[in-house]
Image 1 (tube, helix red, strand yellow):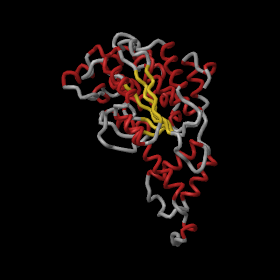
Image 2: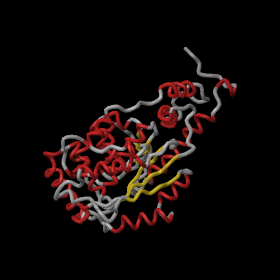
Image 3: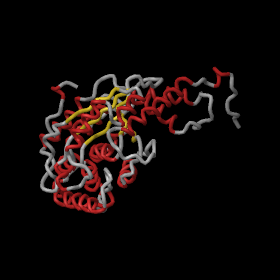
Image 4: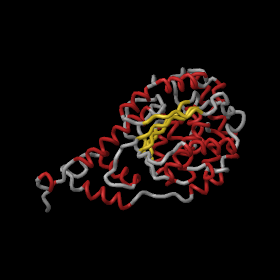
Length: 343
């Protein structure tokens, strides 16, 4: 995407969301036809079969391949961290970015295992968003710039795009986004994040509740929810999801915060995240409810809550397995194996 194509306002983002490409039907049909001929009972590989079809449709080719998987981690700081909602200080965001760059984080190991390129996108860590219990987290200009930054991170040739985030207090932002989008009680959406104690959880829940109440009159759609209650990295992830859709690149979302970024697009245009799957179910209590709202069952349930695209990188290995089985298995005819007896 060239600089001249990047959006200048949230209305331009809304216009993009009204005209999104769908999957390649021809590639999907070819994948379905081959799937039916492979040497296995129909459906016996479960979600691996679904993944092969999903990849073929969004990659627009058959057979689907994972030759250039990409992992992106967007990092930013949140003003609401000043409310004491995390077990760690905001300085940890920059420290972990350095750890990513040096190769010492979990995502480095998992992305390497998946043979995926990893890029860390650092977003003005010295300039956190505004504390959203006091006012909107971002101006419209800042929100659009962050979304445009995420859109620019998407390059032609990615055949799967795994997204994740780093930012102290970003599960507070995710909880606020979900509470604003879906209602219920703030406690329904607020969890322990980095492992906070009961008193910190009380402050975190109160911050989510008060922020949503403060901004409720301005929350006209999902993008305004993002502007008022999100974060720079969350906006960038939303932009990356949108750009990937425009380029027909399949997306793998990480945990709670990353899925909340997708939810703001879904709130504007429900089909906007059809090209996304969710890697794993976070132990954050709001994540399961959010996935139910989006209609997206997770691929894995491993009790993870790390963020940083760790679950999304791990899920790339499942996509590779789906591609290997789909392309490499013999058909009944090729193997000389009798097919299913017809009634």
